[in-house]
Length: 95
Image (cartoon, rainbow, N blue to C red; front, side, top):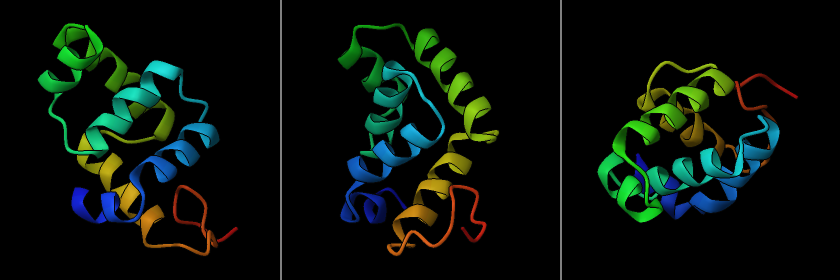
């Protein structure tokens, strides 16, 4: 799924979702790096954070996106990547 998201311009999709759901700059960066296939440890190392801090940011991302797991978040990004017309909102509902 990450490959499909990457092929559809992961950064553009993540940017749109981050704006729509008011993610902080750090939450946005954690989401973008994960969408590009980085593990929690890789994200933590790249951002100079502990894995626990990255987990905290994920908890905030889950809350803001209404998801319970990284798989749900990636599924949401996948839906956005496969809806190039933008006819549906972040939750998959027609606009």
